[in-house]
Image 1 (tube, each protein chain N blue to C red):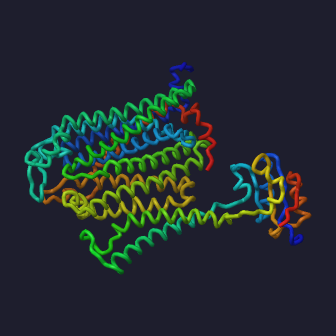
Image 2 (cartoon, rainbow over the protein chains, first blue to last red):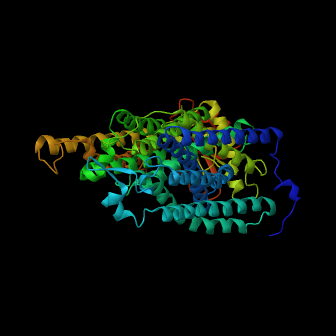
Image 3 (cartoon, chains in turn blue, green):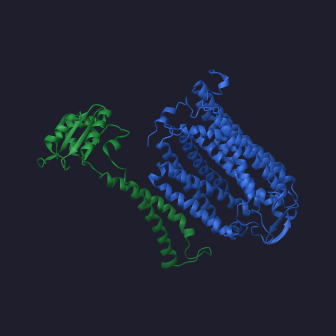
Length: 423
Length: 178
């Protein structure tokens, strides 16, 4: 595969503009400031609350990146024609993974070093408090913990998390570099390279994303278990990624980059996928609730009982109506899927409720002595700091990649098919 | 209007481009009862013919709604009304356990709705069409494109419509008998 063109041109990209680089720098400053504020909150504020809020912010941005990474692999695997023009922005978004890893391990290190009951994952410190059958005890005295400790211990947890990030970063980087290389030399062999890596990546990614959900979110309450939990995270990620892709592509149309490239037919296809994953998310979320409701066994029902406590009852209902019924009924109608304004509305709506869904799963996990949730629903200042912090870093990483590359994979064998895609 | 036996007029075209531009002109003349026959789908033909979006989704939605509410009603009737029986300590009726069945019925009847709606709107099954009397129309499945304007259209007039079809580039304008 020969290289052509000058190396200074960073892949022959024409997108580098002073305005773009200025914005990237601003995003980095804002992101860094947000993260420093979050760290300050962890050290001086209500640490468990700040930590959980930071995990919400982190998983929000990560879920968008993961979903986009899955979409890229699906496009490669199915040799999809229509999606080629939408693939490039998603490839840039996957540059977030190394930075997300860095932020995540700061949270892990904090949790390992934090005092009793101050960290995120209570099983990390054997002196932490757990509630067993309405009585408080330490993790040390927790029989359930000892049964799970072969899996749930600090060393294995860190090694596993390193492995997950290794898979995310490794496969995403190979796919991204192959795609950028094809821009330069136009070699069709890159497409085959991507397809082979996607075949492996989609299986490794499914496992890694599942275990991310189990390890980072489900083990916040390690007494509880649900086989649907990994799929819940996957379905939520796909919805977030599709909403993010729609917003990103329409923003690029607005900026003129995608004008005449991203057309009604592409918006319609993304809208249809959005509808499909809305149903899939509802199916998974309902199934988890239904199985637990039907079996009616206290060791798992408490998770939902806690989420019917005080504010959480209303949050749950808001998810049912706001995260399912509204987007479902809205996306059923053809006109809503082809009008940019309406798609911007529903995509922003879905992202908002996705954030609420993460709050619902993460924040009530800290239990009071009664076993009920310690925290009511609320958006703390530190949550905003973490959300903006991680988001700023993701935007900066995206722009760093975006500014040096062509806006679409210009020499992909499927690019003409995608440009001429028709409903 | 012409005599009772006439189903309509058929004109033939050589390329998809020609038939599409001709279709735009027929549409602009205000004809309603007419059709274009092509060997393969031609993108943009719907707009050229002035055809609005299919109404099949309405049938799908009605089917889906019937399935969902029918399923709920059926399970309520059987388990809570006709023969109340306690299963697993659960309430006589709860939308929770009725949901999986209602959900499946939603999908099943939505699919039926879509298929039946498609048949109704396309007026299928249609085993016979007057155009089949002409051997030339066989080429509509190979390399020729046809426009048929039906005599049932209020604007149809054998003379002026023939002239129109020739004007828009159609050749071999033929009268089709019913």
